[in-house]
Length: 368
DNA sequence: AATGCGTGGTA
DNA sequence: TTACCAAGCAT
Image (cartoon, rainbow, N blue to C red; front, side, top):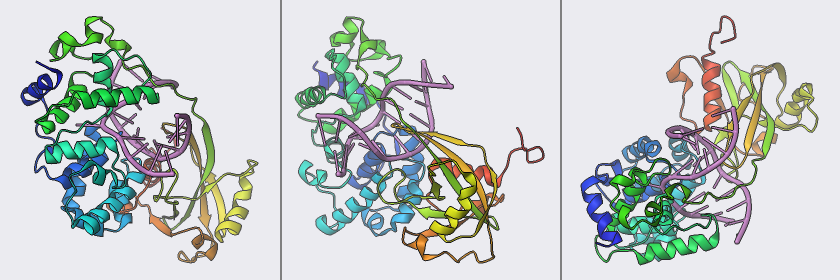
């Protein structure tokens, strides 16, 4: 039995059959799940997928939504450019394809956020075509099966893997095969502690027969992670905090967060002058909160929150200096959990910070 | 072609 | 605690 047939048979007996996007399998739901699953694990995606499909049952509804509402639903899932691309793609499907997803790789890859692998996943899972994907699961399986020793972030290795993925495609049952390679990678050919004894490919797997499974895939070489520091200005009045909408590109693009301040010299007392000049707000520095460290894949962020009190009673008065930089809002933060969590697209560490502000641990002593 | 882009699980 | 990396894509 060849590679593909072994995987197809294994998938039908042992593979996953009841993930949310496998039920009511429509192109819309397959597309939405595949975009969410880019660089994101299944268990993380499931609640987001459920919320999105409950709120938007068709691509047309998603296309007509407010982007800010989509970002609010997406908040916490990461890689926020995916969300912006998601809506642009939905609008293209409505305007150019009458609300029906196209069934060709070329057309699918013109949709923002849909690349070679995602297009192939939609073609196979939603339309039953034979189309090669190359995700982390397939990459790991192929590197082991063929004992490919090149680093997986090298272009030559990627090209070799894509060629193998194409060559191994079965003529029929492309949907089951694609689901099968992903299931095999996730459940059997795992990165750590693979379950080779249960693998339908073990007798022909070069890494297994030479007892070198742990050597594949060869890890990508990475640069050292740089570190970034800045102050986070929590400008408060009556339990409301000033938020600015971040620019569309860059980290946390389109999300809302408190103003950041990166002084050349660490003169904290100058923050009040900065608020006056840049934000047009009269503020009094109250105190410094415990620092926050947030790790990204490519850098480490150190945030030092400063609590400032807004002088004067007018919550809505914000000078035009802010508006030139984008939208603003005052975020209600209160111990009452329902009142404290309005629908705002916040980055995860900011969400946690506000939760801690609203419910200070051991407020009697201030220490834990 | 190499880099930027989030978050959480795992060892 | 740290490092790696997961249903990748855009630029």
